Amino acid sequence: MRTRPIPGSSGRVRAVTRFGDPVLHTPCRPVTAFDDRLSRLVEDLFATMYAADGVGLAANQIGVDARVFVYDCPDDEDERHLGHVVNPALVAADDLAVRGPEGCLSLAGLEAGVERYDHAVVEGFDLTGAPVRVEGRGFFARCLQHECDHLDGTVYADHLTGLRRTRLLRRARRAPWQWRPA
Ligand SMILES: [Zn+2]
View (cartoon, rainbow, N blue to C red):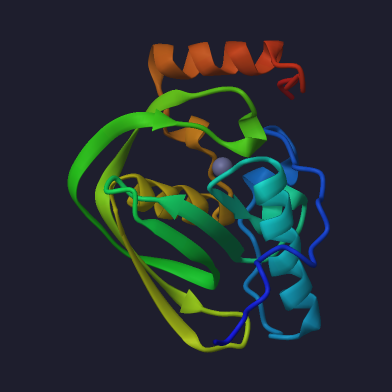
């Protein structure tokens, strides 16, 4: 039997950037070097995601300007999806648009109803530079769309309008990590 190290076991738990930090609101740069630094970044992302009890984490959520995300996320059938994508492109987001509760480690403790497509396909690369294609449905499709958004500088709050947005931002201002509007 081939044994593989548990993702994140050699990673460092990093501070999670909070809503309002400019790095979260700016598109990330594509990765150009598939080197040790990239492997360490993926490890740190896993370590931080697990420490924070999340199901996905993008590089700018630990302050790194690079198009990389990791995930360990169940779908609606409770099947587990585990992996990472470098330079992801959301190549399909379709089927029904479903409004469902969504949270984010960068808006810790908060949640809002966000509309997402029920089916998503992401193409990109793994940390060795090999192409990967990830397909998700239900909650996992939501996760893929959420993480691709992060790398484009979009946070789920940006999808909200009206009362939903006002309510979320009010709660963000009162959160223990205290978002302060610029
Ligand atoms: Zn997030």
